[in-house]
Amino acid sequence: MNILQMEIKSESVDEQVFYIPTVQQWEMLIDVNPIINGKYLFSLSTKYSKGSVEVIKPFLRFIKKYKNFSIGFYEILPYRPWYFCIILRNQNLWQRVNIGERICERCGWKGAIADPSDKCLYIGSPEEKEAINRAWSFPTVGCPMCNNKLIGHIIWVDKESFNK
Figure 1 (cartoon, helix red, strand yellow):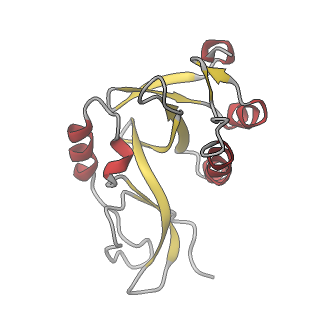
Figure 2: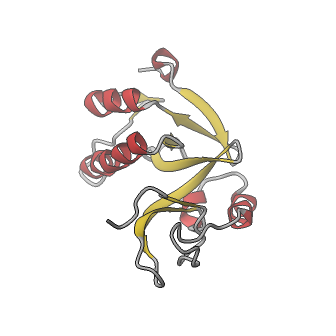
């Protein structure tokens, strides 16, 4: 299958080509597991196949809920499996992030966060050091309830997940 046939958009993220399917395209990709650039999107080796599909499913639920996020995939080397990454639209650019959950030590707020500071996110980027420095330059956000600093370099919080 050719990425162009599927009309999957591609964009440069840290000088690296990322393919960024829509939610509907991801659902189809999970069902079909196409061969793209000569290799399966979800590797057939026992080491990767089940794991990569299972990793994508919760990310897909996440991006359905939060529209400023997407899942991109990219190549590091032709003989290696595809890599997947959550990306956040930040300051009109895509930013690689890890998503997770934090609890505010002051007020107890608990919710989803995005943190771009993990160096592993940038493996394979032609401008790895610059990308990491750029990630650290983004302003951080605090707890949406009390503005306390959250652990990590948090650039996004789910402002709707207030404790009830």
